[in-house]
Length: 143
Image 1 (cartoon, rainbow, N blue to C red):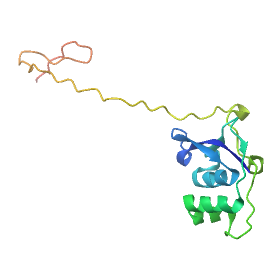
Image 2: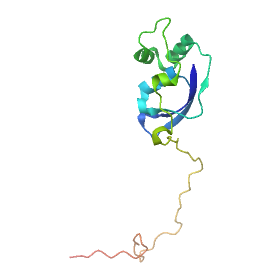
Image 3: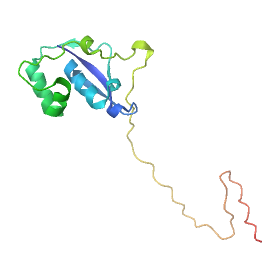
Image 4: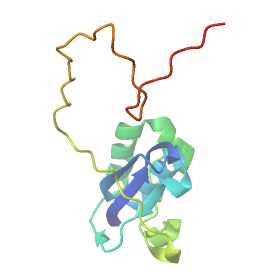
């Protein structure tokens, strides 16, 4: 059975993507069912072969996503269920094919929040409020 890394757009939102490792074709079908077919894209150059057993794959998917999600995709969970073993069987898109750029996960920069600047001098009554340009604001006209 093949496995690969995929880019997953959470709920189909391309601004919320994650990379998922060691995804087999059956797992990819579950992800497509949950997040939308276009939400799962195979990363080029990450496909490998594995010796996964169908019954173990079904058991792991049912444990992770619930038996209902697995039955929605593969039907009633019976002994001897046949799973797809190759990505070509499920037509999983490869990032970069058809001139489509691979979605990138946003980079999250972590650091300290800037401290608030506190003005230590109270404003005097004879100063005029300034505008955004730094010029004094015009006084209101009274009738």
